Picture 1 (cartoon, rainbow, N blue to C red):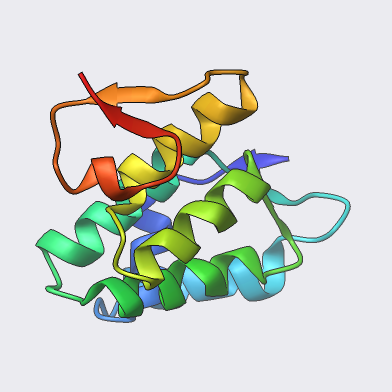
Picture 2 (cartoon, rainbow, N blue to C red):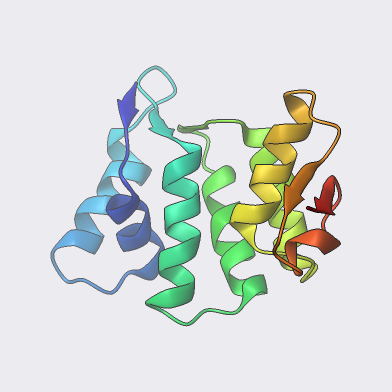
Length: 131
């Protein structure tokens, strides 16, 4: 297994760099295999969502669609995939940010009864409550 950094994922999704994007595409579509997959950490997923928002100005639904495309690539192993998918659903529904929804989902899986926050938007997510 080979770990993948955020910039590889962003270059693959954005297809905006004439040198790096083709390399990222070749890696994800040709070089990785089920026997030698790419590993995507939850940190890389959160950073990718952040970059697509801040640097590319994508809307929440567009970010969710892009991240879901990564989940559908057979040669990628996504850390905590079920929680990542849950966070995508919250982002797509406009309930909260991807990072906040992932924090809540991971906390719930760990047995937390709720996640306390000062963030009013995050408080709309399941498993969140005000401090």
